[in-house]
Length: 466
Ligand code: F0G
Image 1 (tube, rainbow, N blue to C red):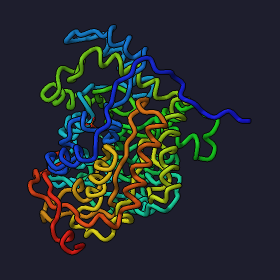
Image 2 (image 1 turned 90 degrees about the vertical axis):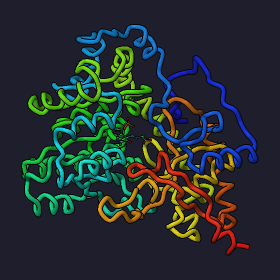
Image 3 (image 1 turned 60 degrees about the vertical axis):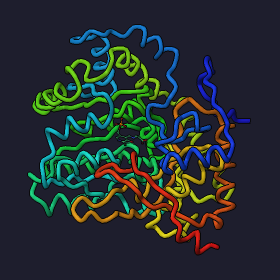
């Protein structure tokens, strides 16, 4: 018999989590204004809100924490991390930041001007936020297949070259500071981009003289999918694939909280000395001196180790395998999820489960709240609340997909937890027709509203149900 994969680690320390009752959860979610970000972590049993900063560090990373050099300038931990970035991604210029959105803030302060267009594949919400905050526009050029959850395409994060070229051809070069490709594409379901697609995007970028950047949060998971799914890549190491990917781009922003397997951190990597120099000024203003950028020395040291651990094939196989394990369980229960399963998360298709709730009443948020009440499982809405209002018309934006994302932290939960989660989702799915009221906004912030939105249950549908 062929031996199955198994996690290439064993557990040295555990953290207790507590189950709660349904009536406790009803009360807590109501007090939290039906916003899952407002829950206290003790009120959650299995926390799949995010895989960001929630991973478990290894013994070697904790050893690096002890070795961290906290010098304000010229820290040894900075140089160790800089060397890892050069070795893995090939970029000479590097700026640490306290997390991914900070890297966006610093780099976009140099590059993005009012009225600019930034094409890419379903920009992540903070990326889009930092573009729109500068009165520029994020243009989604993802392939159409990504917007149909039932289509089983190996690289649903791919950029549609026709859509991209139309943007590049029909607008002045000065209005397009860069193209940004997100690896893997979080907003379209943790879906990877193929190496071939990156080559083609890079060729178009060169043809039109535009910079190419990667939003790199899940670069290693993307490389794993390339190895597994792209013809000709099977015998190559993850590190070789990553090197090829990054040779095609001019720079990167990174949220180290994902594939860096640390609890906080980010960075910018660049080929160009001039942009690095300009970005350094903003880094000093917003983040900290260029050799720490808002990170403790020990955190930079742990990251220098984590970046390598994320490249380990056996780790990635177990990591992506666990996500697929949850996906397969949900599929077996008939729950509609984004296919194929993502690298870091399973995305449940709320449009298919709650079509009777009007889209104006936020189907995915409604489903996420039901799942919490059912089993104390916290996911996150990736739908109309997160999509925010149009910055010009201030109308609500209704994306094609209303998803509940169940993001799995790295090296934290066991497959028993996945079985528990799947059972909770299945129970909500069974009783879906009895979910008769959606959500209504009571308060929202002007930008990135999903973090602080206050909601209440709608009455109209409830009355209708009675
Ligand atoms: N880019 C992508 C693709 C992301 O997924 C995130 C964060 C960021 C940038 C911003 O990085 O959080 O370090 O500032 N994603 C988290 C998530 C929040 O839950 O998917 P950050």
